[in-house]
Length: 140
Image 1 (spheres, rainbow, N blue to C red):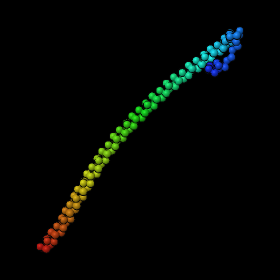
Image 2: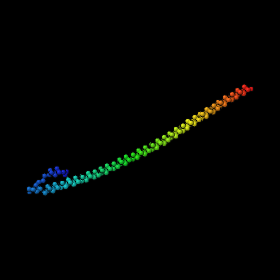
Image 3: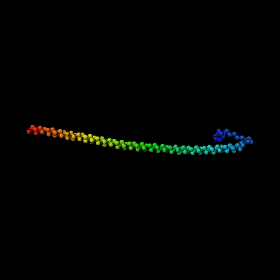
Image 4: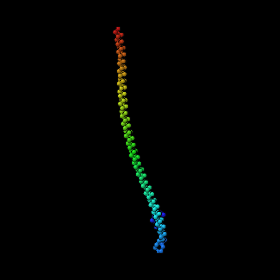
């Protein structure tokens, strides 16, 4: 029996001697009501226990989710910081390489100028030698 107002209203007890109910029927009804009440109390306790477990699990999941979000945020910040550091290092390396390229280009220009002067000197000396030989030949 499920203990509700409707189930109790549906119970019909036999009256004896005018206004008195049959004691055995009353006792039997009270036993049924007592058993139903105990059953419902046990079910209520089980439901309360399940609810408590549910809230504990809900709290654990919420805490785990918050921890995961915090970890993800920290990992993202660390990754950004590492990327920023690497980008800064690469930019500095780029600047260094550009400076080295510029120095090498200047060195190349200086070396080309030196080679040109050396060639002019050699070509100029050979022209002078030819002119000296002509002069010497003329004067003889």
